[in-house]
Length: 244
Image (cartoon, rainbow, N blue to C red; front, side):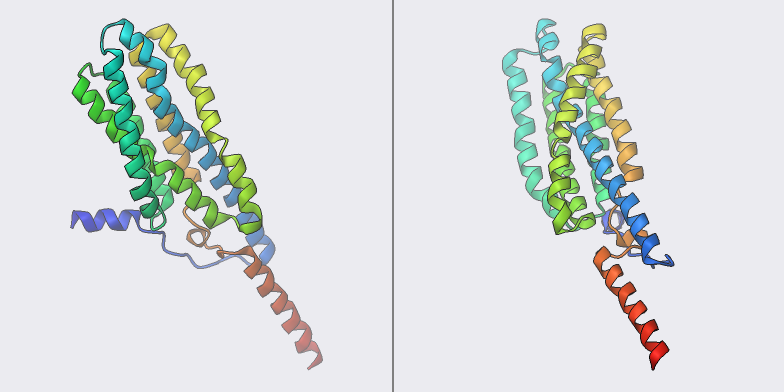
């Protein structure tokens, strides 16, 4: 019963009926939702990187305080790469068949909570386990964004928007080494994790509200060209009715 509820929660959104009166209104709404999805995907995935790179910023103070050795930190970092690699395969498969709004929000929410939890622990085992969990949920971000771009943008524009979106990790890196590093310098390594976690929660809210599952979930056609074709057909039919 619980499993069924989880599956239903992440199932692709049910298409809504189109209640727009004209193709112009549809194109306007499509444009708004496209930009909303693109910008939230770019910023949201940047927040994924903030939560992923937080460990890089706090490594030095952690070693200096004798919490973990450099070898232990190396092992912890490796755990994330292993779980991230596995997650990219499994979560990529699931993202194609999921409500990407909920899927991507879940990934960033969990990795944000992990960052918050890491600020409270000194245990090497617990730290490694939590960082490994973060790695698996980190892999939910890129897959969701790629699926989102493929659902909302056609072949002629998808490459351009994908190119702009691919710079999102640079946004995340910049925020990490400016904001999180400043927090660590002023307050200590624990606050660095807490700061990254809070930024991640902010990103989760943005994704939840502005990263849309599919055009059909908003009562829009999957392809705007279909709308234009249908509108032309209606005009032709009206003209024909005047002559016949």
